[in-house]
Image (cartoon, rainbow, N blue to C red; front, side):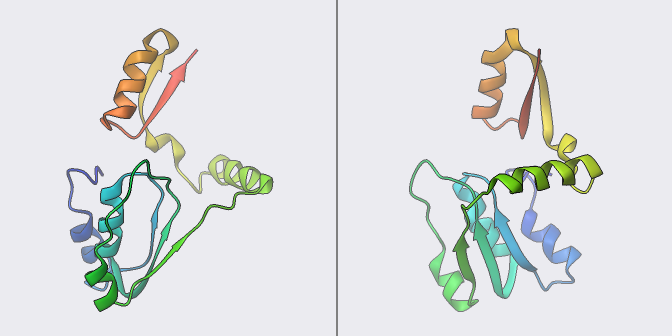
Length: 128
């Protein structure tokens, strides 16, 4: 799913019977993701922001207030979290390969960085 093109709110509402998600994690630095997160959580839902933004982000505060949405930030990563993440990926609990949209040799580094910068895909993998 490409949240820039597909209707994330519609998908979440369909899958939750119109209720919305209990929790939404914003794990990207894309400002539009914050607005989308407020759309997909249920009344009294939780939005946790993990992503780092390069500029100020607008938050639809009227929607936050009327729907009593709780916002929080999360930044604390401990060394053991990396081991836990790798373990989840190895077990297939998190399907990280599905996030890779481009695989390019190092000779095409410029093209790879441009794909990431323009958000044509999700993650770029370099092939040595």
